[in-house]
Structure formats: structure tokens, C-alpha cells
Length: 156
Figure 1 (tube, one colour):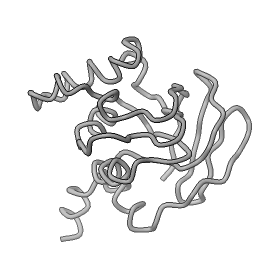
Figure 2 (cartoon, one colour):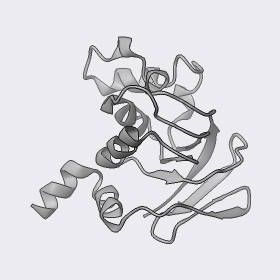
Figure 3 (cartoon, one colour):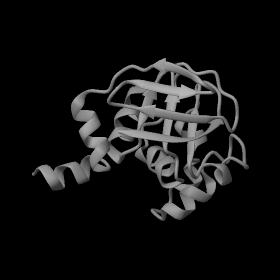
Figure 4 (spheres, helix red, strand yellow):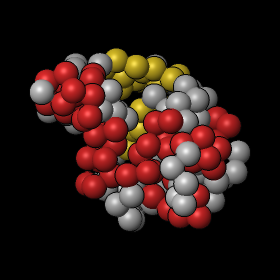
């Protein structure tokens, strides 16, 4: 799986409450989640998510295990999230909903082009190519299918 987008930079230890605040989880309307994604971190972020690659610091997705955080990011049009490390439950939730996560420590410049190839295991930003921690072949299949539900629909 390959992809590219423009970098949107966030810091370390971004918890799922900063991704989508609990006050918006009373609805299952994903458009509400998209409109308010990252609102408590920076109210302007929601408008910059479509076509973006989020470049974050360590421990992205920590906090509660809410699957809605990964869904909100994906539905907002984010191509992938790059960080040196992810909270383990967020990591699985993201893969399960079809949101590519890339474990790599990148220096972020807002708006820089970011491209990646999960099969080959690299990410490039600002002309610098870095090796990434590889995803298992099964995780790559799940992402290619668009998430775990779609994977099981096609693989029985």
C-alpha cells in the first residue's frame, strides 16, 4: 500500500480525547466527528485533515480505547498517521478501520509532502527517505481491504 499527502504536525502523547472529545460521542453521525476532530487541541485542525498525513510525536492515540478516534481521523480524510510509537489499542483500532499507521520518527514541517510505501517499508518527507517499522503481511491485507470488516467480507 502506498500513499501521499501533506504533513499536518501534532505533538507527542496525543490522546483519544484530543482526537475526538467525549461530548461528540453521543451521536454515531460521523460528519459530526469529522467537524470536531482535534477541536480541543487546535480548532483549525479539522479543516486541514482531508488529504493530510498526520505527523506526530511518540505515544499517539493514548488514553481511552475508543474506536471512534481512529474512525474520526479516517473519515476526516487523513491518508495516514506517522509517529515513533502508538498506543497499542489505538494501533489495532486504526488498522481495523483501515487507517494506515506508520511507525517512524519524522521531523515535521507543516505542509511538507509526505509519501510512503508500507510494503517496502519507507516514508519520505522533505526529500529525506526513512525506513519504517514494517507492518505484518496480514495487517497490510486488512488495510488494503479498507479495514477488518471489509477484509472478512471478502475472505470469509
